[in-house]
Length: 338
Ligand SMILES: [Mg+2]
Image 1: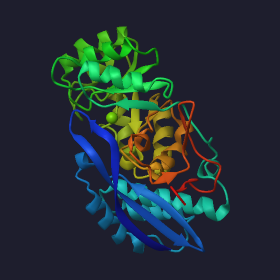
Image 2 (image 1 turned 120 degrees about the horizontal axis):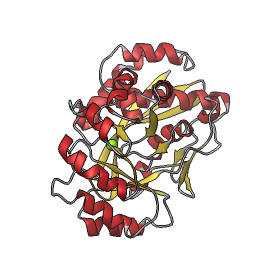
Image 3 (image 1 turned 90 degrees about the horizontal axis):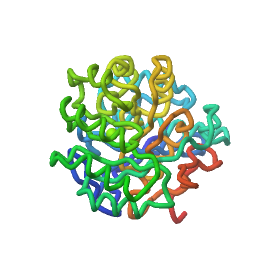
Image 4 (image 1 turned 60 degrees about the vertical axis):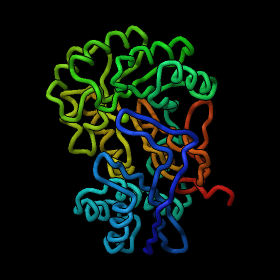
């Protein structure tokens, strides 16, 4: 297989803020694998929180070319060779997605069909970045009619987190979810969660810092389900998450690609955990890889490409609030304007 890769800068339609940071652009790595007259594409969205950058992901992808071999269908063998190198999960995800895209194209079937799955999962949530309560409510109003779930970023460290949810609840009836991105203490969580429960919030994502010793107590005492994201990277983390959460948030950029994500879903199910599929700011290429496995999940937050001013890839379609894969072979996406 021949490999090429490059860094692409994605422009967001508006500044996106969470407890940890604000961003106007996102750098991703686009990977192309060529074999037997076909090209497979995948995208890496490196996570700075875990020490990854577009430059480190690109370097990993380029150094991995020699590990791919000549059979794109040898997914287990290739995966085992790649996981022998530590870190750079986003880069691994791009390679795994590109291999799946390539296999689907060589067989003439969409990846979801190749995996025995469906072209779409539950409705995606639309993420409202961290802002003051009024501003957050205005954003919720603008999303009306287009999305069937809203996810609010909390962790403002200003005592207004519950007010943010109350302000949004006042302008919409759709189910609400919240993501604190590690910015509450156990006491803050125990005070806020009953109030969020009363406001009808479905679940709370990562209220406590990764590995916080209060995790098990919070799971016992929380009136609404706790999902963990920063606590759950790959397959090896899922069992420990059962002690501190009711569900896990899987992202391809953390798991290392769709193949490992599917393993994580089944492991979570065996442990009685719920599963949410999340994303980073990604183009329609990166989001597509998630959409193809989204039918396995209870909750889906695959809005990364919808946050962009212009999406360089088309193929994934938002239909009645659901991100849906096309019936085209592979990941079913093509460059916009082509
Ligand atoms: Mg999260």
